[in-house]
Length: 287
Image 1 (cartoon, rainbow, N blue to C red):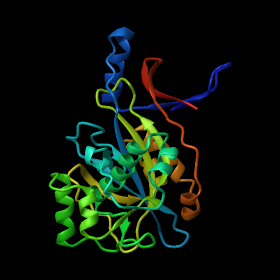
Image 2 (image 1 turned 90 degrees about the vertical axis):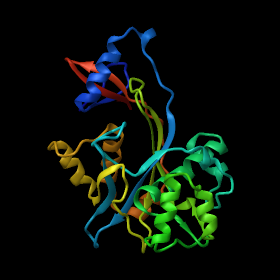
Image 3 (image 1 turned 120 degrees about the vertical axis):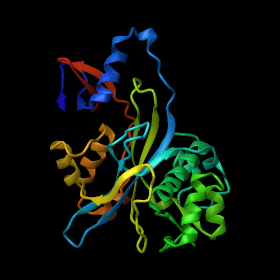
Image 4 (image 1 turned 90 degrees about the horizontal axis):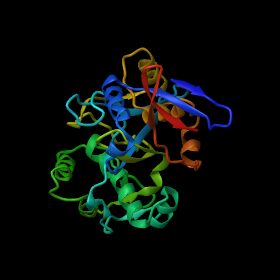
């Protein structure tokens, strides 16, 4: 990774990428611009679930190592998340906390798109690791979703037997949108055939719930310290895409989780671009 500031130019930061991505990017860069195909990105959401260790022990984030057979980011460390489903637009999803209008202002979208992204964030984290950011009232969060009935609810979401609105309504729960804090907005580079327009959210792990490793999309799922993951990346044990790395760098600096979650931060859309520097392909972001 290299950060530089050129005279009269904006600062930028370059990121190393896995060889499979570098080779694909190199082929794309070799094409005349008019022949470069650019896929439309799919709206998606990911959630950084966070908890504190014993007093003074620092922060941990729940991460997945994506299964080797996945079409996107195979073998890489990621946070729970995924693409927006058309059923996430269901206005029957009961919300408690900031409404669609307020989230639209935060996300820079219309209200329909905001509803879909926020609902997708909560649905995906429930599907992938069994954590439900919902409660029986605007001031409470459900404390235990580990029994067989909740497993059936997760399975039904995955096979589309029912949608998230139906799950919440069946259990008289409301989606706690106030538990989500927006922390990033990244779009997959134009050279990638599979692209996502992803909002990164953060949330404190609800008391009484347990995140599990039952997702079929992950080889390993566990709680880890952000600094430990970054060390694993530096030593070649962990593979990170640029957005994950930047989010982990920010998490590694957090000293007061509740204060950090409460404080709104400016979120600027980021679109990495492939560049070739001295024969090596990097992903470059402007800062």
